[in-house]
Image (cartoon, rainbow, N blue to C red; front, side, top):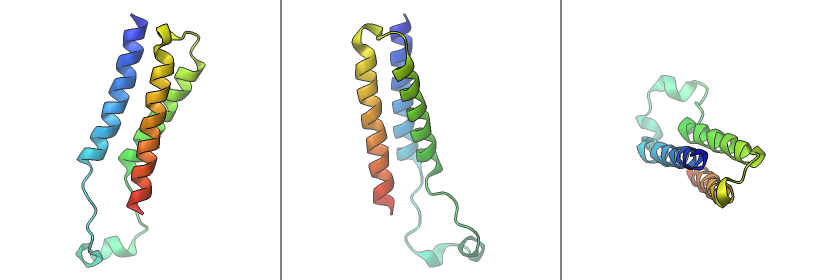
Length: 97
């Protein structure tokens, strides 16, 4: 039962992370399309949803690493999937620059 719950939590985290990526609106490519107030103000953090997803995945990874049980071998698979999700999100942020 606990294995299923942990697996579902990891899967839900991954789905949410990728849902945030897919639903985030693209930034305008033309700087003149931004209002004047937006160009003079301090720039907002780029893609806060991706940063939130990264923080959630890193938190989940920490909990999995500290777990006292291996959940029938699924903990190792969940850690691998979490590492891959973190890696993919970090690549996404690099391509935005």
